Image (cartoon, rainbow, N blue to C red; front, side):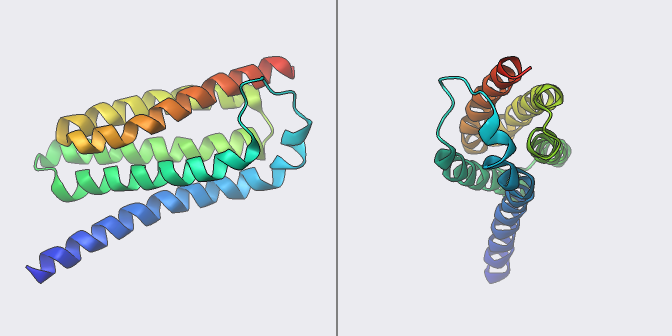
Amino acid sequence: MESSKSTLAFKLLASLVVCQIAGFIGAVFTTPSISTWYATLEKPALNPPNYLFGPVWTFLFIAMGVALFLIWARAKNDKEKKLAIILFFIQLFFNIMWSIVFFGLHSPLLAIFVIIILLVLIIATTIKFFRLSEAAGILMIPYILWVGFATILNIAIYFLNR
């Protein structure tokens, strides 16, 4: 029984750490541009203040980590579980890529394409997660909503600054 608890603890910790690492990588490309390039951009009225992004993303990466843990540790269908986890990591890659493209390359136009792919991948991942664990699917919903909102912001920023 102890081995099982320690295995679950490892899977939870690993799931949380992987997601936080993705957030950290994104922040490496984002943070230097906030007070420089991003500050010079025209933004839509619905753009949140900069101080909200860090706490929101921290929460989202924690929720994503717990969702990943629920699939990795609890789901029974191995084939479906593998596909769900693969989708999760593909969307996580596109999450990082969006930060690199938008903030690192200063390309809101290219970032639109990346974030649309990201949003589709998050939706696909969430559907897979729901099939394996309702709780995991529910934990992904705030992420879908935030990235949907970020997609609108990205598009608006592009059009306001072309």
